[in-house]
Image 1 (cartoon, one colour):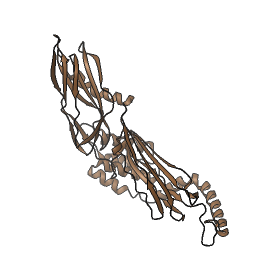
Image 2: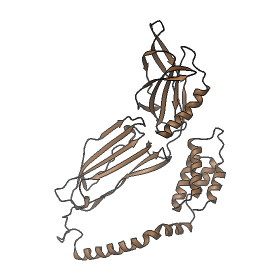
Image 3: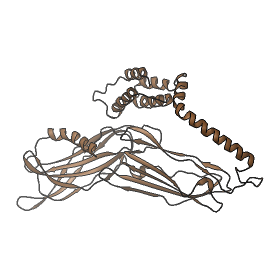
Image 4: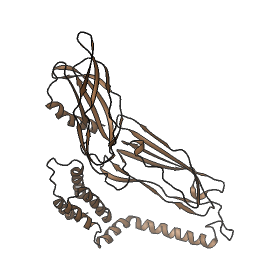
Length: 386
């Protein structure tokens, strides 16, 4: 919240400093925003600010809907007095959360604020105050998935019972909740299809809601299923990934519904012995489990280093994508290739992180002259060692 306030002050300060003081009876309406280069579906906080050297008794300001964005008001209107140019001026402010739907240039406004004010003689007079336009440059969503952005997002996956030890009469209830700050409920993903040939499942009605807060909308979706295997034979529901863009860290993240192994505790094999409990299978299973646990304990500390050394003997498969993106000056593709390049290596360094941060700033807050040496950036990147 403090960072957001500082951004608003820094953005709005020059505008107000360059604007002349209001003449007696003069009015001014502005559209201020905290973000010049959002990605698709990222929240942009707008503040509609009116400065009126009037005594306002009634007002009406409608923010227009558009196919180019979603929006909602996130806080109550504020009316207060502020000293401007040596005089106390009536100030109006309204906070809007706006979410662009597509990449490209986005123009907002002009807006019209209809006012009824009281003249010095006590009469009521109606006037309309018109703002200038505001413009945003919207970047593409940095992943080929459905756009979803948030300042924070939490996915909770809850089960009513252990899924691998169900009784034949048991019904497993699964409840998945996704909560996100800085997103609207319609931006959250649709309910996934978890059907399997070996599974009987019933879905309960979905809960999907958005709550406005001064920090931005908080959205929530709840999915609930009631499930049981058809025969009790072991089966696994696969994981379901949810891709989202972290607007604070400026990177793509993945939350996931966990994989679920199903089975009946009393399921038996053709020999009549409970599944997994035949003597031979039990002894072999226990031996394998013990060996695996010991091996895992030994390798756990050495595995990252071993993997790193083995990969160091082979060329990085993402090097070609790095060079192609740098040659074409495609900075989003260069950023994605660099992330894949580092992930394949399994390590990075403070120098790499600084270079990635430099590239992120150029993508989302580019320099005004627009000059950026992608080839030079790549050369510095490749010289660094993890």
